[in-house]
Length: 111
Image 1 (spheres, rainbow, N blue to C red):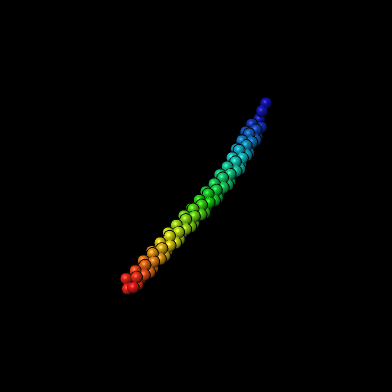
Image 2: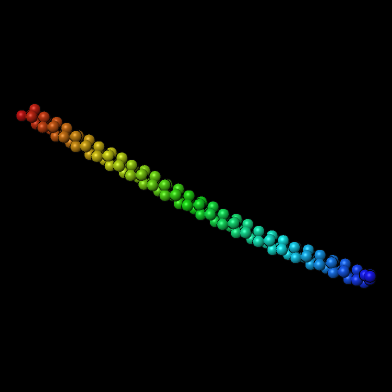
């Protein structure tokens, strides 16, 4: 026959086993939670780094394009200025030629 002490001892052993098992499951769950959170934080950090890198690359590209546009604009302005100077020179030459012709005509009339 089973004595009440044996029953009590068996129920205490069962309770202790359940408590140990519960604690073990809780510990495994805690470790898993920490692993999940750590992985999530690493992924998030990696994503933020990629986003920052992409933004910086876009800014560099914008600055490069802006530099190209600025260079093009300066070249156009320089070309336009050069053309205007050439036109002015041509006009001055034409005026000088006209003046010379007029002077020659005046001299011819005087003779």
